[in-house]
Amino acid sequence: MKKMSEKKIIQLAKNVFETEIKELVRVSEKIDGSFYKAVKLILECKGKLIVSGMGKSGLIGRKIAATLCSTGTLAIYMHPAEGLHGDLGVAEDNDVVIMIGKSGESDEIVSMLPVLKKIGCKIIAITGNINSTLAKNSDVILNSYVEKEACSLNLAPTSSTTAALVIGDAIAAVLSQLKNFKEEDFALFHPGGTLGKRLLLKVSDFVHPLSETAVCTEDTKFRDVLIRMSERNLGAALIIEDGKLKGIISDGDIKRILTKFTNADNLTAKEMMTPNPKTIEYDMMAYDALKIMRSSGSFSVMPVLQNDGPAGLIKLHDLLKSGL
Image 1 (spheres, helix red, strand yellow):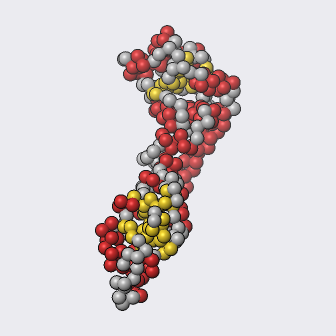
Image 2 (cartoon, rainbow, N blue to C red):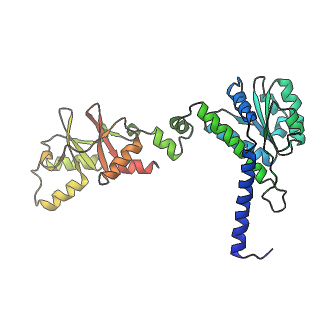
Image 3 (cartoon, helix red, strand yellow):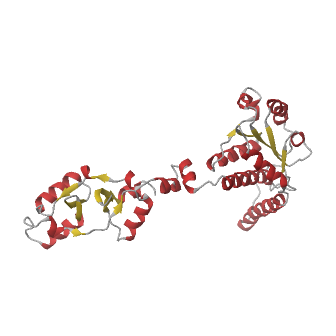
């Protein structure tokens, strides 16, 4: 193993970035009417979009297919070797196939071409060899040629795979804009991610309804308020009269009362409550509710209103636990 200084190792890493950036710039300069034709072909596709590639190109193909799916364009990945052993049965007339290959001469890719053409598929090639068998048998050629790999031996697919990946990203991004794909759509396909949660989850998904909440009237005595709060264990009681929210009593209020009064038994809820408390709307986005609770002195609980009437309580802990 060679011995290298920290400075030398950092410079080698930067060289990789510089090489790949330069190659990407060159590839971007090759983007022309063929890219438009490829996008148009996919937009007008009456069937499926299939992505395929062998080796490192196949790994890039998987990522491109995944990016397409997550940005509003249904795509599947098909491994060329598996395709030659039965999986080509998934291809149908009217399908569009994106085939990726640096040389465009991989045995598996070349063997698939006549079958795909016979089936009636349209083929988009992402290749670094515009004179290859793949290119000659494709309906659209996207030139991903690079002059230099970032590998020190100029052998391992590095710049070339990056170029193919970015072309795929460009296709997905452009299609997304043409389809008017919105944040809400992205969230729908990413319900487990932070953005998905922020755009999908509402206060209604977290509210503790009145049936689970300590509810008192204005004349409820201290002891009964305390018992009901202990039974529900949500950290607060709502004071409701004639279906209207009058106030809230929190655990913090109880502690202050016990500190202030030697005997609080005769106090009523009206005397203890915080009147006209800040509230959260039932149909509000949960992330907006979280921001309100944090900016309002970090309320641990807040009343929830629906159609101007009390619907329950929401807890800051529940929102934070969800990963919003």
